[in-house]
Length: 408
Image (tube, one colour):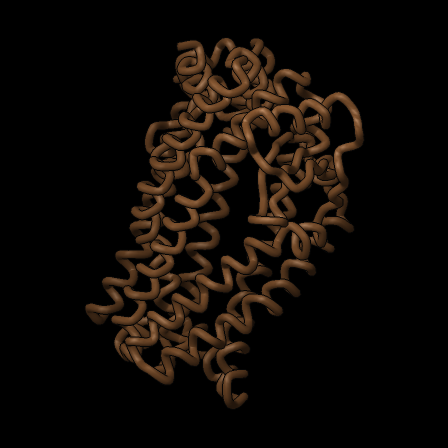
């Protein structure tokens, strides 16, 4: 075993062990009912038991999924699967070999992931009454995702390969700038071009809710270019709201399930929270963090371009930029968890800040707490997450903690 292969396996094992440990600790929390302070106020007894069962089912599912994926990946790697895929890709010339190599790997991963996606959607989510996705909708979503990945991801991947092939390690800067410009363009155009491919967006009809939203936005001097409702109930009973887009395409989107489940006061307090993210410039700050993290990724990548030892560790005999990109991306996933911890910590602070903005601007913290409680209870939010899982994955603070702060 070479030193490089040992490093590769150590990095992959780090990610596997970290997530597995967090799931096992979560299971222990759920089994022994180590509830978050204030959780009893969220759930009646029957609801609490149902939430505990729901998350135990998902944690066990994640453990099986992760173990299966890890074993298949190692078997593929040590049996020379990456080398075979590279040999097939090299039957084409020019940029097409890079696209074929990535397409083969993504297809294999998609086929492995498909039964797990089906089980999670049509068994676990259906068991607890959340799923409304039909098989036709599921298949359509998968096909649309594949087409978009090919049309949008393919050209940008080729551009990254081209920059590194032409300029070597220094190609990280133009590659990063190109990807950043592309991300900004997508963020601007997504509300009008991409999101309608998956859901139907209609203006909220004239009435009390729309009038209240427009009056509140006028009161706080917040320009908005449309209030839309989305057919979230097409896939799930869970409720949500979000802002999307920038400039003239900025929209406020309400799930139809949210409109059904919250009172007008609760809905307005939740929307004031979402507006708070814009007023406090959280959206812009997160965009900057995302671009900075992307730049760091490209800079790290530049050190491995042309590294034969790395591609050989994955069983690829011939060095290429596209093989290096794939190898580094596989290794960067576990390492990026460290960056994710910092970003999630900032995100949780932003959520508290947006809660404070809602309480100040709309003046009804009780309605926000009540709305959050309804959304959380309805979605069977985890009543006993382990602190490690919160640190790793929670971009929002647990609702009981948010409710406690709103009371003060």
